[in-house]
Length: 427
Image 1: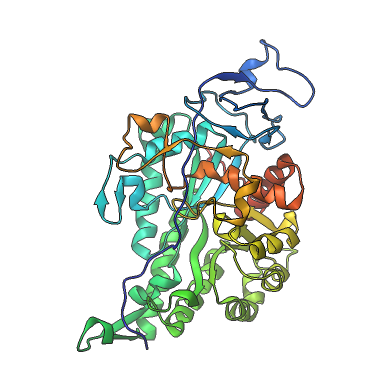
Image 2: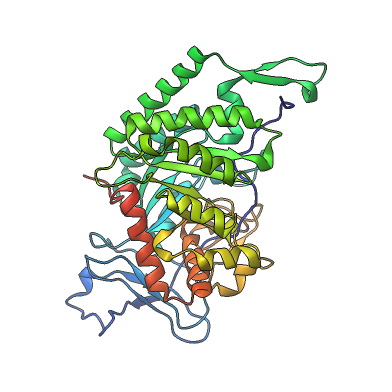
């Protein structure tokens, strides 16, 4: 039993996003794109600081690639071309329902909602697909409604990123759904106990119904964010978290959707429970592994290898790149097992973080009090991460692994598509 507390989906905060002004004709690996062929290649607007920067879009059978010859800063403006089929890179973990994208910070309104600008900026900077995460049953429904609005509105019919979602309950939120609170003398002394088996089965059925409807519509690609979080037990005790995890594993088994897993200081227990369910979760022909990703990974190489042995991918974002120990772990994980994400609006890579020295792309920003929709076409909000920041994550991974940025982006995109599908909306 634990005291009742209000759950929070994410910790940490994060940096801001980009824009571009000076139109630069992109280069192919071998030659300049001709004027006649330019309708097949995107124009990017960007300004470099000192030496040249080359960005290259590969042909339709490849994913977008970026080459950096020097550190650069995106200054202003927007790109305006339609990408070729198959040319995209992916933010495999975002939180588009977060109040920051509605202009609210810690409950205080700071500026107008700007999620549309965030998505346009992501598209302009090369992001073609985003997976947004849900943390409760209600949020799962809200997320699918949001995705539906993207597709039905005129704005959604323009050149935008393809947004997909998950259905699930975050471990710190499991007490809200899988437990009942017993009043105490004060809020601190309130305790929670599991709901009845019948009530839990109803929760599972509700999640299955939401997930299957979203899957049929082509919008749901995973079950989660589910898992364990022993770093914040004040929000939900271990026993309730484990009940919630097991319930959602049943949802994944029925829907045959990949798992989107959360793990904080709980790797051994999470691995043990997944191992127990491995045979039931290995539903792909010719595969004996579990389809899923351990999101925002920040534990040891040994724990990472345990998850990889189950068939899982490792999700890397700014929270995975804070310390020298984090970098050493990521360096040891083969790129074939990594998927890139931002966990935006959180998990920015700050100057105090070990991975910051590998960043080659910076984005101009304003504090939330000075930001508006007018400035939002040229600036990001300081310490608020956006999907376009996935490029910075890729730069750090490329730097510590001593790999070409192209290779990191291409391989991680292919990894995401092998897990979640091609992540392109069918029109």
